Length: 434
Image (tube, rainbow, N blue to C red; front, side, top):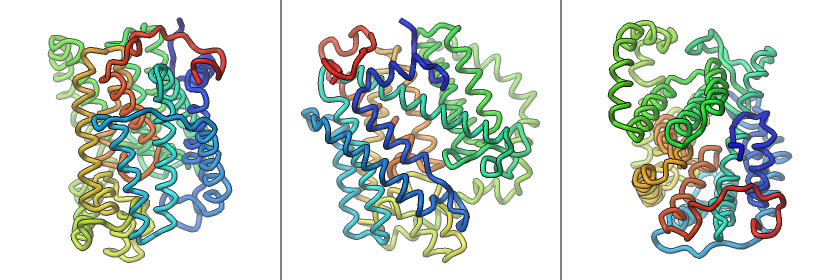
């Protein structure tokens, strides 16, 4: 059988992904499009969507996802050991924070999206066909991410103003951005694509003829991105894959990479600095200043925070008034969660992430065919430290996170025939797949 790819022009992969995911895939597609199809508000700095697109695009698509979800309201039985149950509790607590939120409308919207996304994953993982349905969801999600990344780069090539960021990249004087991805976000996604293709080739049994085009495409996208953090994700990901493959392979890689690293380090550091001041470098582009201020703001309301999804905005507004309140977030998912949901929500979210990481580490060696999914745990951790992450509300990475949680639950249970079931695409959306 032909393998999936994340190349956006691979029609076979699109068709098979939707065939496997069924109604759950259509619902998740609507929810993801609600996240992506937002036009920037030209009257406000930062990556903020205009009110018109929120009400005319985001809200209708989110409700469409909810209607598709309700068309098949079938969910699995969960136990206390299921991470899906605890994430559902987390989503419920996020919604409950509406009662004390400092921005009720924003919290309500984020809570609704998060709950819909969680329920879609529960719907997809309800029976003996759960792994196949989750695989379809995962592949559809990757294809959509890839398509949006390609559109972003094509807009950059077309010299459309809204697709060009006037900031130096690693390889270019300007970088690609869009309403779908910031230049940093494009870098995170491109590196994630590289690691998925690399893990599937080294551990998952993918042929070089499939891996090479995907690696080339992902590297092409990364050329026009602007994320330095992506290099840390890449390094950790490659080390993790090689360590899983064989310790000798990792040692050989490090022996070969070390001399090249010593030779290229000065040039690479110069490119990574991008002319930034030393103060900017020392504070991680101002992140540490924001993080310190946010932590002090959280100390005023440590138990409950300021409301799901709005804690970071409150911290920025209260500390700097209007000067930084236009920023989208704190560039740290942990602090977004801490300031938004307080210590209770923070501990719950951290516990889910830690347990998920531990279970992925245990399952990775036993089921190397799923390496392309498991490698995402590294991106999830790093982006949660340096960007929006998976603890501030619904976003593209949260979808991968939810799929990973459901997958780990099912594989851990050892559902008879689930892991080793033949992977043949369903031709229709009915019958056993639905």
